[in-house]
Amino acid sequence: MTVHLVKLCVGVETVQDLRDWQAARLRSLAAAGEPPELRHRTRQTPRRHDDILAGGSLYWVIKGLVLVRQRILELKPATKDDGTACCGIVLDPELVTTRPQPRRAFQGWRYLDPADAPPDLRLLEGANDDMLPGMREELRELRLIDW
Image (cartoon, rainbow, N blue to C red; front, side, top):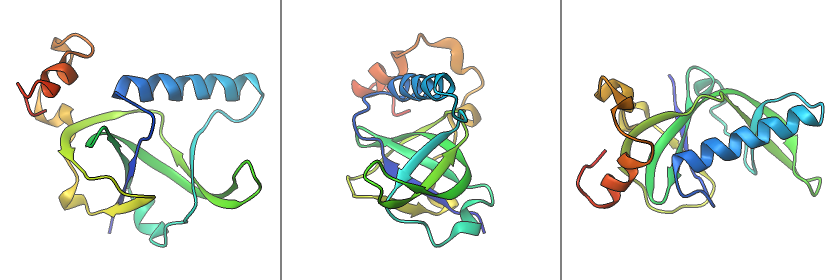
């Protein structure tokens, strides 16, 4: 059975900020001659490894709302900068925006049942490109739209 993860995206204000940060990370890895893969390091290794790799995604909480997800490609052992063992969550570079879903602050990550996961925006609307970049976020912040 597929299961997802949900995690706070600390230090990021918008989905575009996350997109820019990840693009810069991929460029710096390529420049350093390392494999250009997005790997988020987390202290705890999920025990439901097989369920996550059966189509699971990492849903990012940005400013109190789940706004975007990335498919999880692999979970592998990693080490933090201080040498501490951790789990490397390898992510697909494609960011898929979701219908905003409120989420309170928490530490670490949490499992997210597929029935509780917000739907992708591209499934909710036919033409997501009709709005200027950032307009959807501004309208949502003004509470003129909910997604």
